Length: 130
Image (cartoon, rainbow, N blue to C red; front, side, top):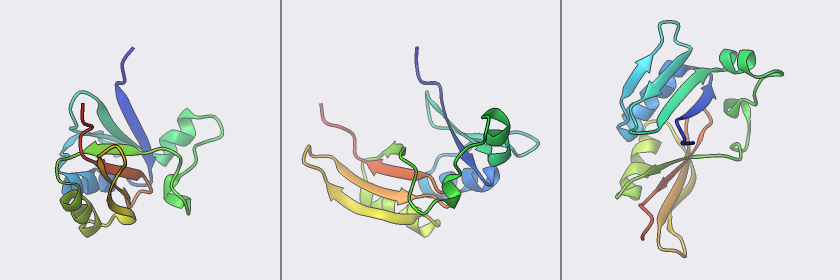
């Protein structure tokens, strides 16, 4: 077993793809012709975005829409970078909301949190030592 996809249900797939490309340099890999599903080029594991309508179709009873919650959902996407302050500032410049400024954790990792315009909680962090 291996992790193949993380798929985030969002109100506007193209807008989310644009945000991740502009804010984090993760280019669009795929966008289906209907605009209801797309992917960023992220390496071995795919980061995908699907329209809320697909979430409602795929999951009986629908999904909780992160874009409509006051607090972020209890999950995150973690993006690893050597320059957390720069990545954090760039995300804010492209429309992310600040959740927590860059801070050093007790285990030595530099970590910050932002919230994407689509409501997704994003951790920006340096690589783990070891």
